[in-house]
Length: 250
Image 1 (cartoon, rainbow, N blue to C red):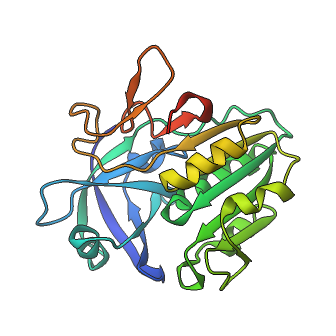
Image 2: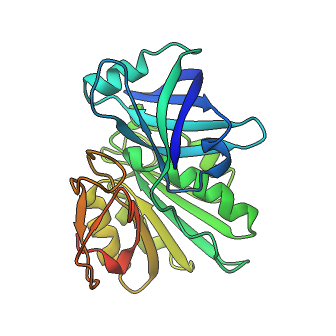
């Protein structure tokens, strides 16, 4: 991890309150792995914003992030014009394990803004010869994004709370129909992760936790999660955000 000035190449609203930014630099784009995040300094705000990495194109030296506008900081970020240089720290945290056995079957389970980091992961696992199945959940049809991209990786199930698009209900409602997989990877709201890990307690899996952060580098201990390890509590920003599912107490 190091500080880098990343140039904003492209900004676009891709779903309700959801924006896609493409950033360019010589370092973070070459080092980032699925599951890591960048820590962005937003003009006129003191605290940086942690945003998961959704995709990387190392040849073009470009990195894609997606975020949902939920406050003044992310609203400001959404209004930035291409060409501006952003002060970023990254890549931060520990990502998803990629040393999976070739020929295996991975199940990706994402909810809302927890969907983006799973796309980069799915691409990497697909390149390693793994079969990829995805379940992506959203509030309603207006919030759906990246369906075509996930479908290009393998079978994809879209779920909306109100049934306005795809399957009605929650991502866990689809799990009964998918049994032939080796490892699952999940990212999303805490409630969703709790239900996923309970339902798949018999399976090997990894979860990525979303949390508000202070320093983003493990110094302030503002983002901690309880674990069943000797360490007890761990810091999401530096020990995570990815953890073995059976290690975390949600």
